[in-house]
View 1 (cartoon, helix red, strand yellow):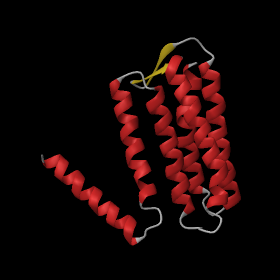
View 2 (view 1 turned 90 degrees about the vertical axis):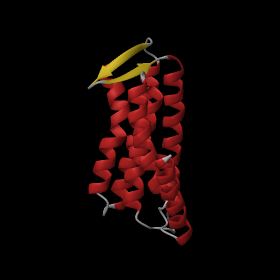
View 3 (view 1 turned 60 degrees about the horizontal axis):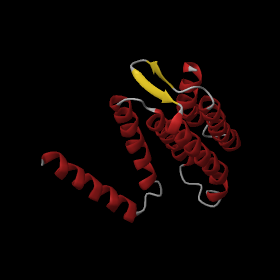
Length: 163
């Protein structure tokens, strides 16, 4: 069960690297993204059927069973649906899709890590990865409004760190 849990969490991360390397090949990249999200969905369903327990890997602790597995299934299903719909959505807006898909999969991996985490440190690590990776989505279009949002976020972060 340890291996299945690790595959569920880290398959999207590995697929993110592969999709970034294959960015020129649009159809192959899209297929890898969809396949990675489908594999994580299948693995989350498989680990949900096992008895509840805590799985440790490289000082990270994951809990399978109960609400953790239920949330992982729901999240994996939503990411899979988004992966299926993303090519159609970006059909007319072909703007740095390799970057989008890379951070899409990193955010998915981090989200699954948050939902399956069993301790505060694991939750913190994956939540931070999720926060920074999903931030790229805010500035994906690189419009003035998005950059303005970035500057407001940067100032707000600076103020909150100083206080």
